[in-house]
Image (cartoon, rainbow, N blue to C red; front, side, top):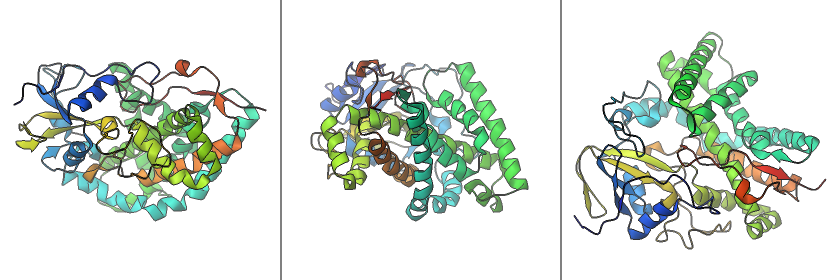
Length: 402
């Protein structure tokens, strides 16, 4: 094994000041040394950081690398020594391999097709317009996160799953606690238990009185209530937080790139390419973890069976060997194939829904408020900590001319 191989012994705690959209400098440096680096976990375990596009994509598609929760016995920032990690609860399929993963994902695939998601466009447009109306009525300044970015995907996913509107606030707060990166262990456990209890009640209600929603559609299957509860948790959290942060962080990025913003305003037909570029450029789902099930050759290195691998999606999507000028936001970029929605069997089930929401929300916001701007200096925008599972802004104060 080469002695010149780059080694990291800690994950970056923050991003460079003034560079909120770029991956942490230490990860960019690791990619500059090569697509794979050694990583020493806090418990002393020797693992790997994969930062290059081709290798990240290869691992995501390789069944020799596992997603099983019980194998994730190391953590990049916490010493897990002496802690036994249990398997994923029934239904929480993101932390499973085949065939368990397929048991839960396959019944959902037909619910999230491109055609079905496009049929939702009119409803997304209506929800978006209602929140823009409320913003306009309230007048500037407003926090775009709470007024716009969070409620749109929250309402859409709640309606899809049949979550009553009046319960949306509870669910939104609990998901924030899970994924915000700042909760204590006690707060995380409390939020998880509260969410599980609520979803158990919801599944029981759908079982008794099915309605026109995805969760009710699954009641005719052989899935147990416990399995349905776990599936609902995955769909609610994944369908809300990632899109909410893309809308808020994406608006921040556009406001900080006025030439790109002007180009999008001038040519609304760019929106499809613009959404794909924002997904690549921001990569709010920063990293995933895998464990080798057998010895695997990767990038000239031998990944031993049982070794944990950190997959850095945000550096993969900024790989200069895959994307021209990767650190530049170019809404007219022709290169596709980003990994923002992952790849392989765990590729995001709701990616078409997220695309619909962004294709509707960004132009509607920019058209309604042509003079939209930050209401605070850019370096005062409060960002989620790097420890958060999903990166984004905690608040985004904006204003416009009235």
